[in-house]
Amino acid sequence: MGNTSPRLKSRLKRKKRIRKNIFGNQDRPRLSVFRSSKHIYAQIIDDTCGSTLVSASTLDQEFRESKTEGKKAEIAKAVGNLVGKRALDKGIKKVVLDRNGFLYHGRIKALSNGAREAGLNF
Image 1 (tube, rainbow, N blue to C red):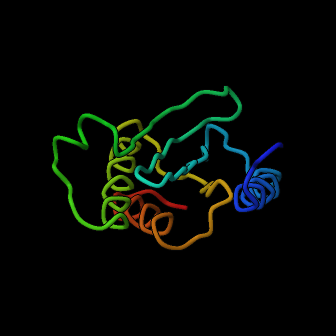
Image 2 (image 1 turned 90 degrees about the horizontal axis):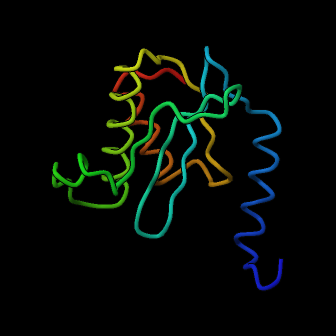
């Protein structure tokens, strides 16, 4: 890893540790969360098939039409709510959270709280 920043290296090490123990199946798929400096992405993945069942992000057309504004944490909560609603429409009620090496606070915590409010169980 040439000029990779130390922050990214430590996040990738945490990601490896987390993914060693987390596996999404049909009964409990994995809710994977990624955040960049501007956007946040969430997808529910079935690891047995290797397929994405549901996804939502700040780049979705439906999300942009809702004109959600505010702090990044509030926007993340709205994305969590959206992914939770989409999951319930597909019949998914229980998931396991994969925070992807990010610490569980701020936007990651807000997204998971939004998904819980929508009806997902972790």
